[in-house]
Amino acid sequence: MAALRRSIKVGVIAEDDSDVDVIHIILKKITPRRAFCIRTFIGHGCGKLRYKGRVWASQLASRGCSVLLFVHDLDRQDLVTLRETLQAALAPCPLQPYLIVIPIEELEAWLLTDAEALQQSFSLKRRPKCPSNPEKVVDPKRELERLIWLTSDKSKRYVNSIHNVRIAERVAVSALRKCTAFRPLERFRTNLRTV
Image 1 (cartoon, rainbow, N blue to C red):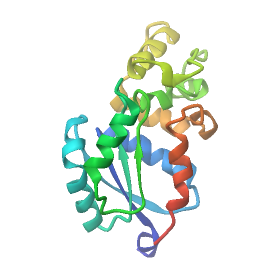
Image 2: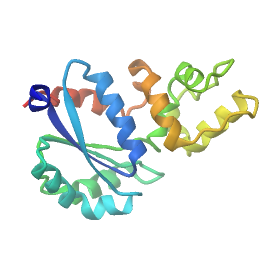
Image 3: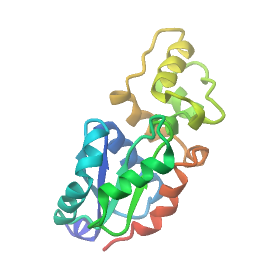
Image 4: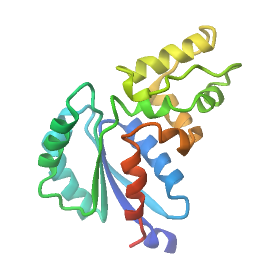
């Protein structure tokens, strides 16, 4: 019970449960000595995030959260315009500090950074050939599906709602740094101190 009182409550607003699970695992990796728990709102797609962002952030604040992560895939949009839209959706943000995390093109690009993690997650005989710059992949979910299918000699299928957590558990932080969209989250970890 004392550990829960000392832990920081992080609010996460994201498109789906899989995104929250991946972010939670990555937070544990980049802040291994800090105790925190996650409170969430799921948009079930990106539309609600833009319209309910501030309301959900207020509700997360009332549930005791002191930090907010607002996660929204880029999905072939203009990065500057999307960031402005999301900032406007939160303004004024009731939680400080907060970070808008915009994976390019999708959060699954982060999972494409580590061939060894993919090999272990799917018990593959050989490592898949991951793209050198996963953020240039137009559809990372589809690319993960293709890579796993081909590397497993067409015997295994990737399903994001099942496999993203397994991959995230194994992906190395050093591999995640290949994605420019990950780096602000890693820097933000200094805000994840116990309250």
